[in-house]
Image (tube, rainbow, N blue to C red; front, side, top):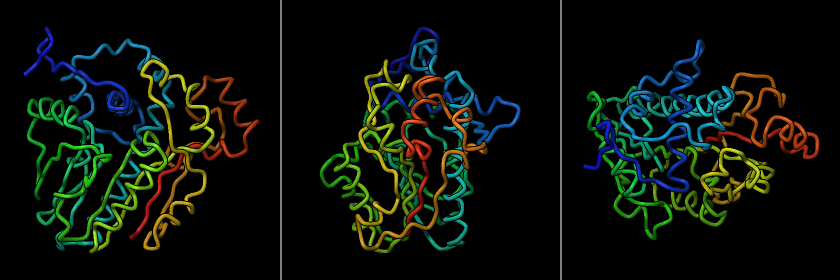
Length: 295
C-alpha cells in the first residue's frame, strides 16, 4: 500500500475527488471549535491518516470559520434526516445508499440497528484511499450490514448490482452540483425508478448564481473544479418524476444557525464580492439548500 515518508496514506486525487478532503478538513475544524455543529469525532483521525499538504491554496481559502459551519451544518442536517428515516422504520429492514461517500463517517455517526444495510459508494480511486485510511482506524462497523461499491454514478447502469429488496434512503452530499445538469437529473430519476419499494432521497443543491459564476469561487480555483448544476427552486426537482414529493428543506442560514445576512455566509467570492453579489442578484440569498424527497 502506498504510504508517505510519515507512514500516512499517500493521496492521489484530482478534480472533484479532491474536494472530499476539503469537506473532512472543515468538519475537523468544526469538531475543534468551542460550539461545534456536527462534532464529528472521526474527522481529525481521518485527516491524520492522509499525507496531504494542508497549506495548499485549496485549504487556505477555507480557513474562515464560516466554511466549517457551512459544511458541518449541512452534514448535521443530513445526519438528522438519515436518523429520522432509520428510526421511522424501527426494526423493519431498510437500506441506506450513500453516493460519493468520500471519506465520510456518517455510517458511524448515526445509530444503526441490526436490520440496516448500509452501502457506501464512490469511484475506485476514492474507495481505494478510503479502504486504506479506515483500515488504520478503530473498528467503527457497529450493528447491521456494511457494504462498499467502487463505481461512479455517471456509469451506465450504475445501480445494477445494488440490492432493492427493502425501503431505501439515498444520500448525495456534495455531489450533484458538480455533475452536468442532465447527469444530475438522471441520477435522481434512476434512483426513483430503480427502488420500486420506495424510500427517500436527501441531498444538497447550490443556486444558479454560484453555478454561473463558479470560476470566481476562491477555493475551487486551484483544483480546476466547477459547479455545473444550479437549483433555486426545489419544485423543479419534483417535476423530474411524478413520484417525487418534497417533504423537507433547509436553507444555508438555518443549518448554519445564523442570520440570513451575507456577513454570516461563507465568502464564496471573497468578502466584498460576495456582499456585492447579494445586492446584484436577489436569488443569491438562496445560494444553498438541503432537500428531502419521498418517492
